[in-house]
Image 1: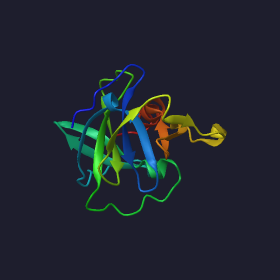
Image 2: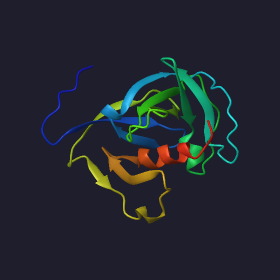
Image 3: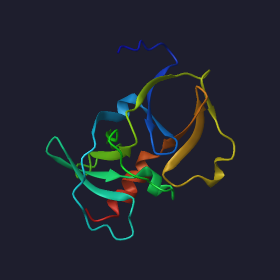
Image 4: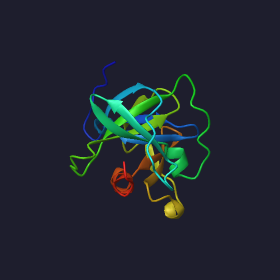
Length: 156
């Protein structure tokens, strides 16, 4: 599927969680792959870290965003996917992060006309940069820098 990009438009991807969606620029997502159970890691106090996921000969940390937000993660169903996201800080030991998805993501065109911030963002979790409504859908914009920092504090 080809999406033509115009000036003032960003190609985005809505990543479906168990409840709600994450919104990222399409360029932040390398690939979306089928879910496989991760290899367990000792991550005391970091129940949001599901383990490491093998992708292209890399051991990528697999994150449950719902658990990070203090929500119930629910069962991993047969439609579950993993979004492989680029990290932003150039840390060679952590080039990618995997985010567990409920199902396949959706491409979306984001323009000023279709996105609006949600008021009351004061109580957002540290790994959420903003809460928005895009094309009538509530979405969270994750703070990948904050997520990367959290992961650097956990022994993988």
